[in-house]
Image 1: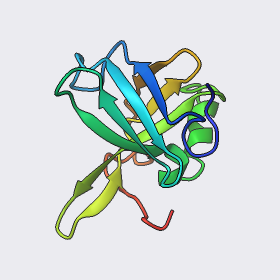
Image 2 (image 1 turned 90 degrees about the vertical axis):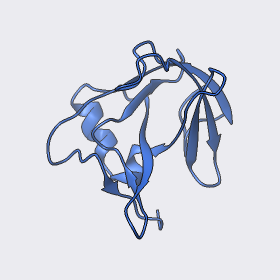
Image 3 (image 1 turned 120 degrees about the vertical axis):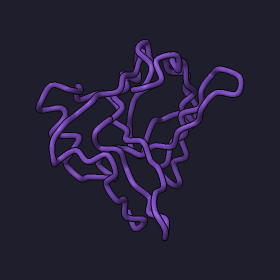
Image 4 (image 1 turned 45 degrees about the vertical axis):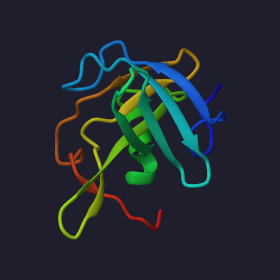
Length: 131
C-alpha cells in the first residue's frame, strides 16, 4: 500500500489513530475509503455507530501546503496528508480544515492529526469545487 495519485492505491484501508482526533480521543480506528473519481476519501469509524469524516489530499485544498508540511518535518515524503471537509454557512460553503491536517503513514496504517496555528492554517478555508 502506498500513497499515490488522488488518495491511495487501494479503495479501502484500515487505519489506527492512537491519539484519536482533536476533541475525540476515543475515535482511534477508521476505515479509509477512497474514491479515485472524485478524489474524496471517507474516514469511517470502526466502532458501531461511530463517526464519519470526509477528506481530500491537502494540495487539493491549498496547493503547495503538503511541501510546506514535509519541509517543516511534520510529514515524510511518503506520508498521505489529508484535510477534513465540512460545510458552513448559508448559502453553504465547502471548507477544509487546514489547522488540523491528518498525516497518515500508509505503510504502517498509523495516522495522527496535527494542530497548526497561524494565518496560513485556517480552520475553515473555502474549497473550490472546481479542483
